Image (cartoon, rainbow, N blue to C red):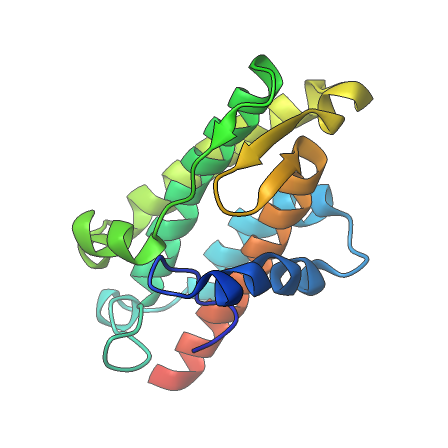
Length: 179
C-alpha cells in the first residue's frame, strides 16, 4: 500500500507516514503559491478530456479523475472547517476522516465535474481570504488532530499545499494510465 493511501484501514504506523510524505512533496515551495494555483492547474490538466475519460479509473478499485476532483472540493470543506475551529477555539479536537468512505458513500464517481471544480474554486478562494487576514499569531494557533496530535494553522497550510500536489500528480498519473 502506498504511503499516500490515507484510510482508516491503514495501521497507525502507516498513517503516521502520510503527513511527512505529503510535506516532502511541497519541499521548499511556498504553500500559498501552490494553494493559489491548484484550481487552475487542475482545470488545465483536464482540458479536452471527455466525460468518459474523466470517469475512468486508472485501474480496478482505484479513483478516476472525477473522484479526485470531488475529493479536492470536499477537502476544501475539511480544511476550512479545521482552520476555522483552530482560529476561533482554543486547542480544539480535529477529527480525521476516511477519504475512501467519503468517496464511496458520497458517490464521488458520479459527481458533476463542473460542480466539483466550481466548489473547489469558491471554497479555496474563501479559505485563502481567511489565511490572508490571519495574523502571525493566528498561524501559530493549534488544534489537536485525533490521529496526528497538535497541528497549527501554518502547518495545515503546508499540509494542504502538499495534498494539492499529491492529487495533481494523481490526475497526471490517471491520464497516463487511461491514455
